[in-house]
Length: 241
Image (cartoon, rainbow, N blue to C red; front, side):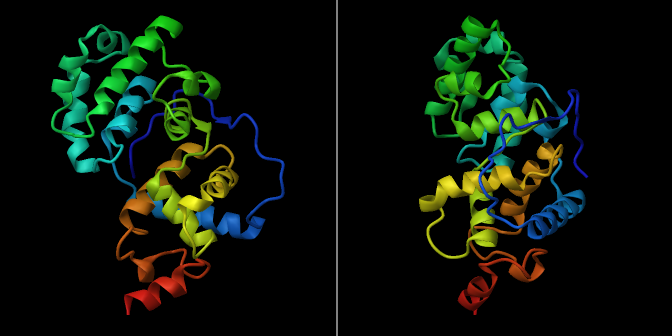
């Protein structure tokens, strides 16, 4: 089981939607229980899961954008050795930050991360903010990154929706159609499904499950604990024949 630190009391998302639930209680609980049980056995032990430092988690989330985990791990360690704090990163020259980032690619990211560090020092004294509105006010921090920092650093029940999570939720609860076209609905689902007080584990589990089981190509449907109620399961198995 992955090693996790919980240094702060669990907080729920600031405002849960009061609209009618998209998923019935019984199905929600089955999905939650099966996902968390799977994660207890198969969840990955990743270096950014051994810290609750919001800066280190922010670095990992920016690095993981469009980059595979195995490529990120060594660069994550190297980057934090050179820039261990928000202040250290803000004081560095942007081109030097870019050099350290190489060869992860998608090269706007180191400049974006440096800009976030500078703004954090200027506006928040070098402390990554906790409130959603404050995080989103930082140029370069989007809804997913804000949710990830709130969930993984501050232990809040904050929703996330990256590519893997979107794929899992769309397949299990929607079935056919274009997931991106239903992104607003999937954000609601992501928040609705979080078991109270378990946002950290649940969100990590969703990402691992999408990366390891409910993969983009050739998902492991026959081994999937969700297959009996997954709306895409019959479709996926027919396509694989």
